[in-house]
Amino acid sequence: MKILADTHVHTLASGHAYSTVDEIIREASRKGTKLVAITDHTSGMPGGAHDFHFMNLRAIPEEIYGVKVLRGAEINIIDYEGNVDAQEEIMNEVDMVIASLHPPCIAFAKKEAVTSCIEKVMQNPLIHIIGHPGDARYPLDFERIVKMSKETGTLLEINNASLKPSSFRPGVRESLIEMLHYCIKYQTHVVVGSDAHIAYDVGEFKESYNLLQELNFPKELVINTDVEALLTFISKKRLK
Ligand SMILES: [Zn+2]
Ligand SMILES: [Zn+2]
Image (cartoon, rainbow, N blue to C red):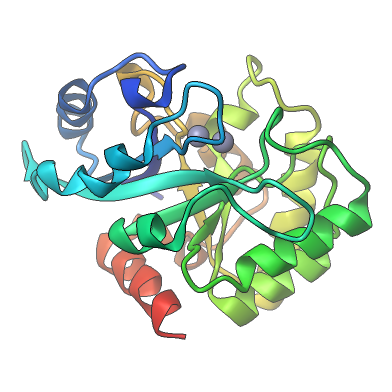
């Protein structure tokens, strides 16, 4: 299995990441990654990018060093009603939107509250991916989440950074094992993202490959093993 698109990458604009677009795309090109989505944090994250950052992403060429560049955003879920910190104007402007739960943007909560929140977020036609599900501080009923993912065409992410020993997020591995079992049961697609905060980590998916292999997870359900399949999947969401 080879992941050909990295759907989750941060630049200097995120406020706590350390590389430029040029450094990131050079590294992706060197590694043979065919597509990179630049997904900086929106303004609800302390130090996150201003709205103008996202409105001006069209300044970035669509292809650099042979790598296709998607204009994206990682937005913050800010309450348990499923509200987010980005206006529709911004979500419409970019090609791809990841929505995530991050401290300090939202307090930790119990399973029922977090699950119904994520169900609502997935029903938002402008949101394509749920970023790093599996953080035990935001527990989920994965059967419900996977069913809603299938119903709404929203991708659940295997976040490589969260699987590393250096991760800030507890319990991710155990949660993802449960999630992936349901993804097999319901034949639901997932997406793998590096969540790189520095260029060296772009296109690095070692921990995710190990987990997928361990579970014998079908390659066909990992949407970004095929760039065209990823782009088609994402374009369908907004048509719903
Ligand atoms: Zn995140
Ligand atoms: Zn991120």
